[in-house]
Amino acid sequence: MQLFFPFDDSVPEAGACLDQVYAAFASYRAPRGFCRQCFTPEQEEQICGSRAVRTADYARFSPIYFDHPNCSGGIATFRHWLPRALECAAFDTRPDPMLPGQIARLGLLSWPQAEQDALRDVFTRAALNWFATGHPAPLGRQWPDDVNNTRLHDVWTAEILLSALTYLRVDPVSLASHMLATDTTWACLGIAAAVGRPCILDDIGYLVLENPGDEAAMRSAFAALDRRARAGFHSVLTYGVLMDRWETLTTRGEGKRAACLLGAMDHADPPRVIETEQVDDERLVAAIVRTAEQAP
View 1 (tube, rainbow, N blue to C red):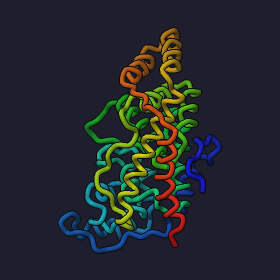
View 2: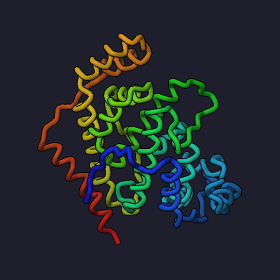
View 3: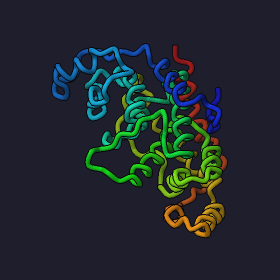
């Protein structure tokens, strides 16, 4: 069993990665029987009646991200619409948690490996494209109408990509090394998000699992992933490395990027890494992933 995966710049191109996601989730359907306190019959028909997933308007099914998943058919509905949600609005900041957190909330680490692999590839491709160009193809960016701030959008994008890749067990050392080697504004924002926040994975609140007995193990695994991500990022993005990058940016007259990096350095709190604790964390993650692989 492979527990962690390198940040792989050889994943397929954007369109192929998106096709893989649609194929991985093609068997799911949105069941009827929605909660009438949360959804009208018309909304239920919109969400359950369409089979044209790849051309659906995001507004047609996005209400499922603002109520308890069980009110709209549960995990099956979520998986049915997930490929289109990623294509249209992977970075929509209105749901709480945002889409990677919602995926995790529904037991991502226990999902079939083919689904996890497809999601890992598509988020990896989006991160590669965004670090290089500022465009996270094939994932869609959709923002609330009352927010018109490009820099804020980019900060959110960096944080969402790092959280998604962490949930998907992408090795933080290789991810940090890629960001450091990519001399762009967007990679700099990724570096800032990796070292300047107290956690990589935010609290996602309640969980909705096919096996409710997995909740304690799932929460422990998410906490372990967060600790591993922070330790891995800081092992590459050390104070000395960041100071060298800041000096380079300052010398080149790139004041905004230098200020972004300096702000992250001011907030950085490198974790104390104890080898035995790292081994324990890997066991926590492995236990829930192995359970998923052994499921019939």
